[in-house]
Image (cartoon, rainbow, N blue to C red; front, side, top):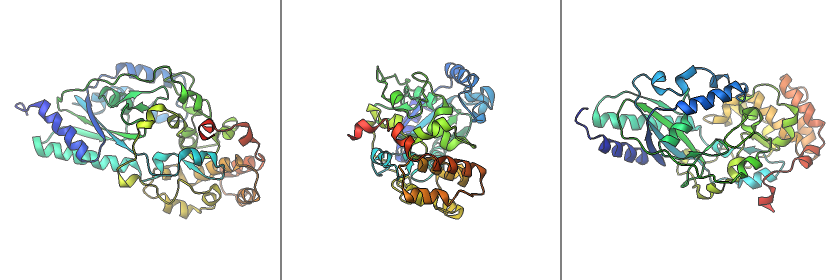
Amino acid sequence: MSGLDWLEEKRFVVDRALSLGFDACGVSDIDLAQDGERLQSWLEAGQHGEMAYMAAHGSKRWRPAELVPGTLRVISVRMDYWPDALDARLALADDKTAYVSRYALGRDYHKVLRSRLQKLADAIAARIGSFGYRAFVDSAPVLEKPLARNAGLGWIGKHTNLLSSKAGSYFFLGELYTDLPLPIDAPASDHCGTCTRCLNACPTGAFPAPYQIDARRCISYLTIELHGSIPEPLRAPMGNRIYGCDDCQLVCPWNKFAKLAGEPDFRVRHGLDRTSLIELFAWTEADFLAKTEGSAIRRIGYQRWLRNIAVALGNAMPDVRVEAALRARIDDPSETVREHVTWALAQGGAPRARFPSALQPALD
């Protein structure tokens, strides 16, 4: 490889990545020292909650060459996911409709991106010969957002998501750790300015300060990562969100530049952009497994699925059908489900009135 023109090879990598369906590609070095310090402070504050994996692996998370020896560069890629689905604000405004974060309405992104990254690696190897690499898609101790920022794909916004001035924030990230000495891109600069819409929109107040998130209060954490009982004070603000939350992104001005996903695998499955809570609560475990096959939703399991829907039904306005659905599971085998059903039956519609959606002004 000594005689290779690395600038030309980088052009090949970027062009090939785009031809494989990625929407952007960049290259960074492996210096993440400052990001490692911020991560350690976050962990020391306990704001990762039950996500013990965030504290595992020590410095490998911010020192790529410790995770994959020989790593010199990281190739970061972006793939847009926003589906052609029922308007998110309309879904959030209907307390009988289940709200699923738009990234999870289609096929599991891990499988889609990992397959494309492997094809990218194969294309590079076919061109220059065997080389050292390892592909990651949210599957190992990798600081994907700082790496993508350093590769010029966007900046980390006040809501802690990556933002692109060309594509907003509705996209997935993937990485190839590699031993190739490719030229690096310039890091992206911050363009949030004085805007605080994302911070103000969070239903549960998960942002203690700009660029900081307390995962323990985040609805995505509560509905996906948390295994046991959802803290009662946070249940009512969850509204009808049963898997993840998009509020901080929905209000971001930069998402006016977001584009619909070109990837067919990210199209809505099983009508989950507009299905009623009552219908989903009636699913058997067999239904759940069949209809979440190949979906990111399956990872939470049937018990947490029912737990989340019970909370959402408790936040709906009183209705004989809602009450009947809840009472049908009052003796559920899961203690966690029974506890949340009991809570939901006791609500009588009050929480919805006390905690109107922060997005409501956009609907009026």
